[in-house]
Image 1: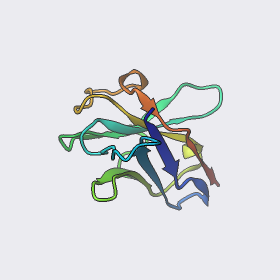
Image 2 (image 1 turned 90 degrees about the horizontal axis):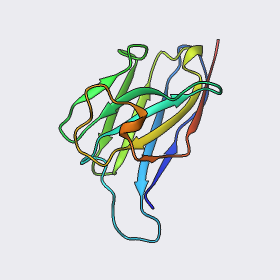
Image 3 (image 1 turned 60 degrees about the horizontal axis):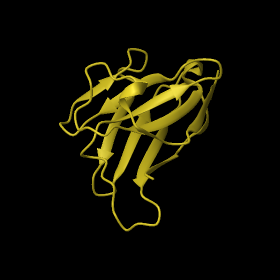
Image 4 (image 1 turned 90 degrees about the vertical axis):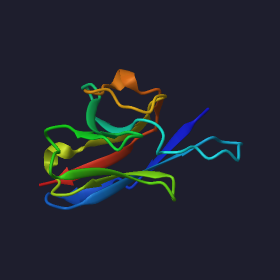
Length: 131
């Protein structure tokens, strides 16, 4: 079963930055799972609320962002390291959430990607922003 391993969460003051990383793997296999040939994204969720899409990127270089994070967050891929990133700058207390990496089974992301478009999920990494 494909796994997505997230890292990079933590606690930071408002205005600070964090970079999340996500590496896909297939345990017990030498197969490398690419981050470049599928729609991949970052979502976030706070207790008691649904999962919110933050940013997506696909095999064709198309990216999308939630309005709340535009001009502050950047999604990117390092194909050599097989890693998906989410660079988060100018963090706000309302960005506090658990962040999840997700991978679809298709290469092109939907126009308005939702949770239902993704088949594989990481365990999440907590981001806490204090005022």
